[in-house]
Image (cartoon, rainbow, N blue to C red):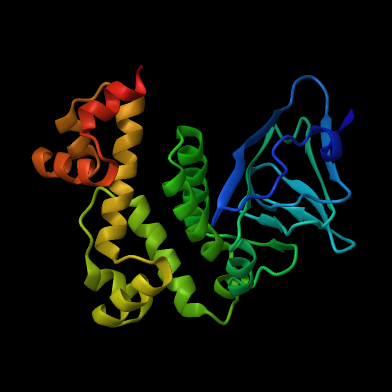
Length: 280
C-alpha cells in the first residue's frame, strides 16, 4: 500500500526567517510493519523554502536527486537545498520491521553562506556518515524539542560540518581519522582520555592530534568529552532515579561536587533542579 505525503498542502513549517540561523522543525520519522507492506512517498515538487537534512537510522529510503535514484541505507544522509524538488520513499515489509530517519529543516540569513563553505551548494546524497553525525543529529533534535534553541543551532552547525562533502571526501584522511577518534571518545565517554593512545591510533604526534581535533571538531578532546558526559548526565537525570552521585560516577566524574559545578556552568541550573524541572 502506497500513500503520499504531499508537502504542498501538509508542510506547516515551511517558511524563512530573519534570524542568523533558525530551525523550523526537527524530529524522527518512524513507520512500523504491521500485517502488510507499506510505503510512504514524500513529495514536494517545488521543494521547500528552507534547507533539509535527513539521516537514515533504520531500514532504507529511496531518494530521487538530480534525476537519479539512490537507495539510502543506515548511516546515509540526504540534503536538499531550498526550492529543489524533493521526492523520497520509505517502505516496510516482512524483511524490514521498521523504517526510521531523523530530519531537520532550517533557514536563516547566513544559512546559504554556511552551506557554501561546507560544499553543500546543491542537493546531494551523503554516503556512510560517521556515528558522530547521528549523535549530533540526536542532540539537535533533543534540544529543539526542549526549547534550547541556542544549543540546537550550535549543534546544527556541527552537524553541517560532519555532513560536509569536504569532510567526507576521501582525500581528507586526517579529518576522517579525527572524526573516528571523536566517535571512540564518545563511545568510551566514562573513561579517562589517553591522548597518547588517541594520537598513536591516528598516526599523529600528541600535539598534532590535539591541534587537528580542535580544528575539525571545534573544541579540544577534553572539552569534547566533558560536553558529551554532561549531555549523557542530562539523559540519566531525565530517565532514571539514580542519585546525583550515581549519575556523576556513571558518566565518568569521580567528584560529585565538581560534576555539579560543571553541570550548573553548562546548563545554568544544578543537576537536582534540572531533574525537578523535567518532571513538572
